[in-house]
Amino acid sequence: MRKALSECLFGVDESAGAGATSSSNAPAAETHITITYLARQDGAEGERLRPGDHVALLGELENLARTGVVVYVLDEYATWTERMRALAQSTIVLSVFGDHLSDAVFMKRTPHSTLMEIFPPGEFNRNWETVVRSMGIRYVAWQGNQYVTFPPLPPRDD
Image 1 (spheres, rainbow, N blue to C red):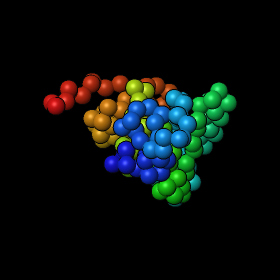
Image 2 (tube, rainbow, N blue to C red):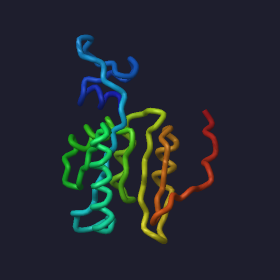
Image 3 (cartoon, rainbow, N blue to C red):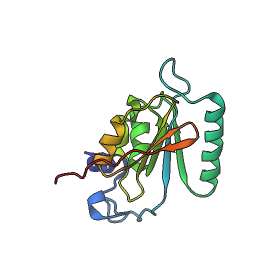
């Protein structure tokens, strides 16, 4: 489904290898890091970063963009098409925890694909870790100023 979505939105045929497009006349895409931050600051409900942390994160994402990293910042009012376009190109998706992370299953698969989920102190669940790791996507949980590690999931029985 993710491959079909990518081809529909971008004309990219992922089964033909990195950078291949469905049109043989189209130029090959360069390999690069693309980060999507799913900002949840403006909604009436749900989790969000402290205002100062949100501003600091936006500043660091702008710094990364100046180095050539592609950065998308999408708020909760982004259309479905805007979200899918960004997520299907993303190698890293980050946001506060919540159901809005379900779209991370459409992120681009590379050896560096990572979902970064931010939790407030005293809260944690493994819902999205289980989902994305079963799909071969690296998972990172953050709480406060530290990386939160957990025992690895058992190997898959293929």
